[in-house]
Length: 295
Image: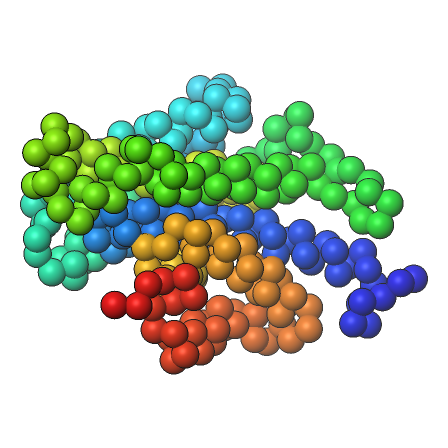
């Protein structure tokens, strides 16, 4: 059997796919964080909780209301996006202009509240969510067996990430968003409603977290702590990519997922810390992150 670095090629490619799937979730979550931080200057610690709420909504829709996966993939991000709008209007907007630490503490408290509510209602045991029938099974590529759903997750993540980058960096709407964060009064003078734009940006970031949660539901167990287990790694991804850098978050998320996956093969003891070791090295060499702009 052909081997790569002493590992059978099928096991090697299987680990590559696992790393890409984890990287896809890192990329989508760090993308939402980068959008919110880059455009609103908010360190959104509630992002992991919103990801968990998205996964739970998909599970509740299926188990309680009989709503299938494809409708949940649309409805759950819309509901969580609306929740994000409520959070921005009722709480976060009062903190604009203050030290970002206040926003971090508020969103950290919100994440604990949301996790506590779901822990109280559903316990700490994970809930299983079946893979949709259309994506069940696997495809034999000859050199490896590719699970259909995991391939869908990677593809969907890439489409969402590239689409979001394009909207922010290459469209007039994105130009308004970036200009509004630089000089809100000047942009408002041109007739743009900046407060509404800011509100919708936070809602869109929350919806991205929920979309990642729905995609993750059939891969991982749906549990109240699934967001808090992931959010620290996602923050490390954002720091490595460059705070506020959209493309940096996407590329770094996918890359770190693959590196973490291969670390589990070659040196499993380091798999839980490899992301943070890379973050420390990057901060020493380039404090603004790989794709960040030096001040």
